[in-house]
Image (cartoon, rainbow, N blue to C red):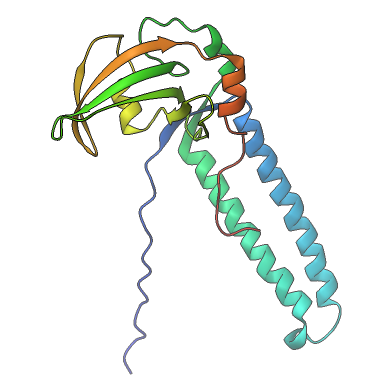
Length: 206
């Protein structure tokens, strides 16, 4: 009799560790999310114990539901723990962006830029708040949107000074970027543009 064939399970490669610049309080939010999951798991375990005491498990839908819910919470706890362990989080206080030096473009600045596509020769102008990872809000009423600092465009812009064109390679093709202005944001702009701090979206939990 031939030995049983070994099952091959494909698992996608994990993303490499990264340094994430996040808003102040993000580490606390991660810890609170994990603590809440532990409390939820304890409640589900109690539900499972109570359902188990009701008799025949073959038709005990409450027992099966509690068991499935515990597995889902376990998966989410594992993913959250892996996310926290694999990354380094540097907390940034957006209030410090109100008075940053503006000699060159930095995280937290509002900048107006001109982008010239070298292939089509078309020019476009944009105004961005260069924000920390995850800040993707936009407010068309004030003409500013958030540009994540780890995006290809932000990576090419950070460190540039006003009026000095720079030829860069972007995913959309080569371009010339010119910083037209740099300024600090206002408190009202920060309040309207920055999204709330929340834990990462992780599948596998409720």
